[in-house]
Image (cartoon, rainbow, N blue to C red):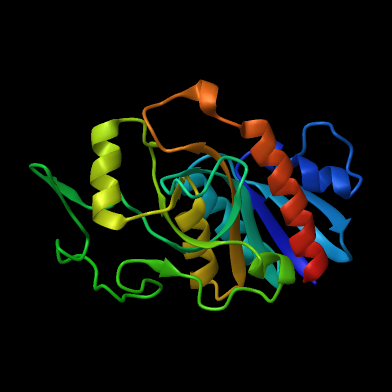
Length: 226
């Protein structure tokens, strides 16, 4: 199987590259390797939605893949998901897309600029229609996420977005990856490790190293079970 493994930054890809025997020097934008019996291209998109969508679409048009995997870290709104836990994000959305009207956020549907079910959306969400069959993937909690330009660290904005969408996790790339895969009709999965709770910014409480280690182990497990 030929797989595109998408991460925002090098540290998220490092455990898989180490497993594949790739030297630990700073990887290039696209690194080709063999992992768990698959031909894997590891793509570092950079942080954020624009970079992720652009680099994924460029990869999809330049090569043929059987599957794309997006692996990275996330913040958790759901207190049942602790730092270090790994999840499968099956639903995601662009939570900031719209217009402010006083204290309200008007969605693209409310603005008349998007039908709720315009492809690839389903009721303004991106929903993975057919995740790949993988015992390791199926063993992860299936969660809903939001994708943001600015991660939440303000108690009022956290309360507002939690009330509006009820997300369990947030990232800066997930929905952009899903959107790119869906318009290219490519099977995909988004796997994330919780690095922190979504709360008033408290960097001392983050467990980034633990999250990256757990993410790497689960990612290798997913590749091995495909």
